[in-house]
Each structure stands twice: as structure tokens, then as C-alpha cells.
Image: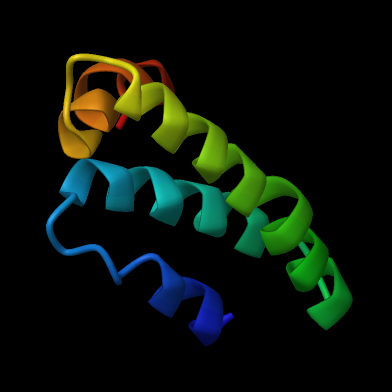
Amino acid sequence: MDSLIRLSTRSRNHPAYDKYVQKRLDDFANNNFDSNDAKDFLEKSLIPKLDELIELAKNSNLNLNEYFKQVINPPLGL
């Protein structure tokens, strides 16, 4: 699980994005999982979703941090 948590701390310039990634990792980590489950979660769920949200942010008039801060995080209570 430590490696999952470290993934979320890479983008120090985008704290709202980091909050979203951390929430997704925490939600996953709260379940019993093995290394295959973690790999599947990252490759089939988290990364594709992040790619989708990053593309939406690029197509908005907001930078990445502001997009997550204003659009993505509020409905999640972040």
C-alpha cells in the first residue's frame, strides 16, 4: 500500500488533483486487495479515469488544479 500512497504525492504543483488521487487510492486501500487487484485498479480504473479527467481539464478554460478544485472535487466533498 505504501507504493500506492507515494503515487499520489508526485504532483506538488496541483494540490486539488493530489486530493482526488489520494481519495481514490484511500478508497481502494480500504478494501482487502492483493497485488493483482492493485495492478488492475491502477491500470484499468485509476489511470484511465485520470486520463479522461485531464483531457476534460485541457478542454476547459481552467488549469488542472483549478479544474479539480472547482469541478471534480466538490461533489466528492473534497
